[in-house]
Image 1 (cartoon, rainbow, N blue to C red):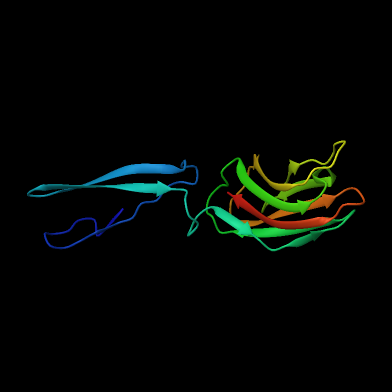
Image 2: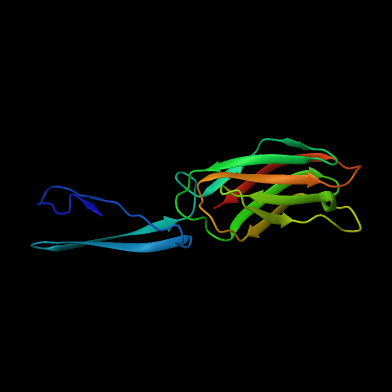
Length: 166
């Protein structure tokens, strides 16, 4: 939209662009044409999906201890508008010597749980940083919670940080 919608020579107007929540990340060329006694064009690039001011990527980098036979929770509050882009993207960094001990779920703002990473296996490996895509169906705004359940005895650790792109 333009504000004001039309101007006389020597004055200006402000262009405001908005994109929907489902707009793919990328760079889009935009050409604005002003007409009157002459025609003037200006072209610029609109970038969607990078940076976080008003963006859709949120991080919690608070350390939370992961104990045997207990659940650790960490929350992020999103102020993104519209429906969450499905699948949401997660990056999780955990210091834990037995990734196979951990059962990880994501709870969305509506209270729905989504399985992220199921426990199980015959050996133990370091968790480190892992990325996931999780199909969801709900609004982007609100509190997203990561639940990490250590289901076995003998290995403990820390949730170092996690990031969600909604």
